[in-house]
Length: 536
Image 1 (cartoon, rainbow, N blue to C red):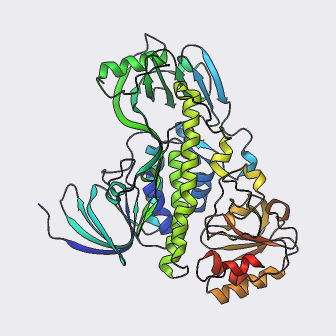
Image 2 (cartoon, helix red, strand yellow):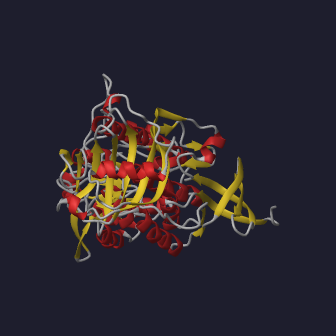
């Protein structure tokens, strides 16, 4: 029975408070937006999921001041810079080394590094930061219903233990409610892509495996033999971990339904088979059932409701990108919602969220699928499969095309590339360059986060006044800096680059002057000046 409803008015309601929901709430609060985040579970993650944090996600955490905290915590769980490789069993033969060191060859691209930390450990840090920034987080709270109109979204939420019920009126709702997403289902938005690949399981267990590791620093260990295909991950001090199993039996015609007939004894048998040691004592702690998919939602937005993370895309674990892709969804959406709420942007800016992020979700899901197929599920290999791209291209080389990007340069049609080749082109992530700023060495990325920022070349002092004038004309604070970034950003010594709050290049020029106020109005979708700008 519902208790008497109490009304809540809030600019943004976030449904789901796991990794992506917490990231969304944190980043909205970082931009000064009042947020209510509701999470069905009674606390943060209890299982050690989503361990790989890419450099791009670490850059997002750096913006809110969490990078060093997460890096220090990660050391307590994992030996960093480990390998991703494959074996027939942990005790047996090595089959392939895919990545000998997860940070090999990428340290120059960012001030951050790839690292491993479990969702169980990182979520409390994110929750604490979210609350510090002013957001409200309610655990053990479920959304019972929602409806939207032209002015906002009305939802009913209920605390699972007290039955206290509230009617929430929000201007926007962000669905971070998981792969099965009741919100996405209610909106009638289908998933498109490869579909369900298997009814997979994750077995959480305890076993002393240090001797079986044989001194190897292994971050992810794929297992492929005649009885099962999946992967291990172990935490320090190597007495616990989990085994994902996607398929079992004949590799050419496998059983893809691991749920049917699953017992504790069967789980122990699977773990022992993957370990390849009949004598190691094993204790099964828990089992999670989930579906391996490679899909993206047909739409990322319906009116005032946005999809983020698992609700927007289902990405196989091969690559470790699903949670990271969700963090980037949140990073793209948060500043746009903040600017729209403040009246600093036109309504069409919010439409650019889907235009920018859905192609990334489709691309990332497909790349993870290709790794799943080529490394484990070879029975799915068919003629004409797309090319497996470099991990770095997937993680940091995606390119945005939308009205929030203004370019006078001819498009080559690429949706991604190696980020070293982007050279600050509009729609790409702004490159990392070490610079001297106020007597200390920082990354150019440290200048971004809340505002649009103008970076001028070392001889671009006139751009500082141009930014000041544009700030006054447009009514926004536009910090501007002269830096030796011409080569990395493709602007030369006298040109300038306009970088968005999410660290993506909105516009650039090698000229010594341009109507910067018109550029800003264009990328903020405030007036129809795009055709005029592109013609110049």
